[in-house]
Length: 291
Ligand SMILES: C=C(O[C@@H]1C=C(C(=O)O)C=C[C@H]1O)C(=O)O
Image 1 (cartoon, rainbow, N blue to C red):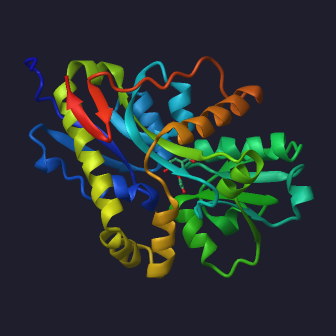
Image 2: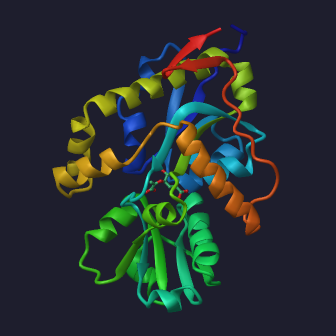
């Protein structure tokens, strides 16, 4: 190990429930290396990772695409869905025909879904709405917009209110139009951190994979936590966590590549996007083997 191998590694944790399976059983104090968790909304983690304020994080897949030459991908970790996701929702105050040429309020917490919405509106529906960023509060957003995009727990809580609006699930719309998976989040590490502190990064990665494995074997702990912190019913959370996929294999990659292709065609992202995996790990069946 090199001599400053004890530097604390800062790991960004997506605070929405959709990422809980990857973090719930992850306890940095159990690692042999110093690591600390920084919980935030995806858009904040995107920015902090980009700025080097944290070393590794779950971030928006769109943000990964923007900076892919600075990051390595932590293999087989994502937040993805094949169809309905239940927490990436467009609430329509006006009819869809009006929304596609109207004004849409966009949550400031997202990057992937904001651009997914633009692909859906402009490429699939042939519209050209105007967009404005807004804090994630449904009623405020709809005061002067035709529709509002919410993600994560903000979307879930809003979907439970008696709002009366028509709702589009963007995971479902994407899947209907493309037949593909959609990947909303990926796990990234700064290349510099990975090359300088390979053992620390590998230790954290193993911890995340182990948490994912435990959560998929038994969903009850995260369901219980969601019930007490957010509300809802066991059935709701069981369905929610069963619908989400936290792996990242060939099928999810194919869907994400199509998303990046459409984003490029619309000028939402430029340059080559390379999803280069963490080099010190050879992942077979999810198990990291140190070379
Ligand atoms: C499934 C979701 O995925 C999230 C959506 C993100 C985005 O839109 O940028 C980022 C991280 C994901 O955890 C959700 O928020 O509901």
